[in-house]
Length: 467
Image (cartoon, rainbow, N blue to C red):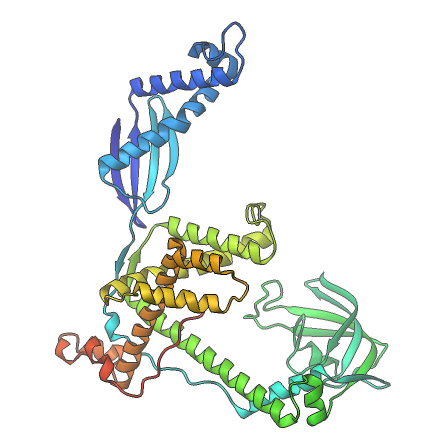
C-alpha cells in the first residue's frame, strides 16, 4: 500500500492511498464468495462459485462495491496508523481509480487555536434598559389584552380594530390576497410592510383604496426591500378599543393573586427589571466573547461544524414534534434556509467552544466531582417526578456527569473572562493602550489582581443562546 499525505487548509490532511494488486485480488475473491452465499448462482453450490462467474452473473461493479465496503476502511485505518494521524471526526473518502485501486481520504485533524492576548480585553458592562416608560407600556399592553371592542360607524382611527380585504402587488405581481383580514391599527405596526396602518387612518369604510408604500432597502424581506408595494384595501367594519380602568378591579381580572392595582404594578415592575437586567447580562456576555474571539486565530475542520448542524437539526426536530431521522432530509427552499441559519449558528458555536476550551486550560479552571454532584442534586430537586432509583442512576451516569462538568467549566471560564474585561475597563485599559504600550508588559493588569478589585458584580451563567 502506497500512501502520500498533504496538509490542506482548515486543519485537514489529504491522504492518497494506492492499494497493491495482491490485496485487491484477495478482497475481490472474498467479496465474490460472500455474494455467492447470498445469491443463488446456477450450477454452483452456495459460496462455491468462482469470482469470474459471480461477476458475470451479478456484474463486476457489484463485486467491487462489496469488496470496497471492507477493503477501503481497513486500508484507511492502516494509513492513519502509518501516518500517526488521529482524526477528530470520520474522514471523507472518495475512490478515484480502480486500476490500480486508489482513493483519497480527507482527514479532519485537531483544531489549531492561538488565543492572542485575551487578558487585555476591556469591555464595559451595559446598563439595564429599564425605564418608567417601559413599565407604563407593559401595563398598557395588559389593559389592551382585556379591552372591549365596540362597533363604531366612522372612519378608522389609531388603535381601532378593522376587518378588511387586503391585496398587495410588487412589480405587477400579486404577493398578498387576504379577504376578511382583522388587525389593529397600531402606530408602527407592520401589516405586510411598515406604514400601511397609518395610511388607513381616516379612509372611508366600504370604499376600495389603492395605497402605494415605499419599502426601505434594508427591510428584511428581500422580495419587497427597496421596492414600492401597492396595496388595495377595502375596510368593511371598525371596532373601537375600550380599555379597562387601571384600578383594583382590573388587577383582579388579570389574576386572582392580585388584590390591588398596586400589587399588579409591583409584579410587572419587578418582572420587567429582571428581564432588562438579564438582557444586559446576555449582551455583556456576547460582547466579552466577541472581544476574545476577535483576538484569537483558529483553524478547524468543517466536520466539526457539520456535526454541530446535525445536532441542531435533531434537537429542532424534537422540539417541533418531528422525526429526527427524516426532518429536513427532503430539502425544499424553507428547509435550505433553515439549514443555512443552522450553519451560521453552528460555526459560531464551534468557534466559541474551541476558544473557551483553550482558555479554561490556560487558566487552569477545574470543577471538582463534589461540585458536579451538587449541581446534579440541585437539578434533580427541581424534578419531583424523578424516582429515587432513577435519580441515583443519573448521579452516577458518566455521560451526564461529563456534560455537567463541561457546562460548569464553560460558565466558570466565561465568568473569568468577564472579570478580566471589567477589571481592565475599570483600570482604563483599551485596545489603543495595548497597541502603544505593547512592550511595557509590566504595566498590564494581571489575573492575580482580579480578587483585589472591588465593586465588580458577579457575572451570571450564560444563556442557552450563548452556548
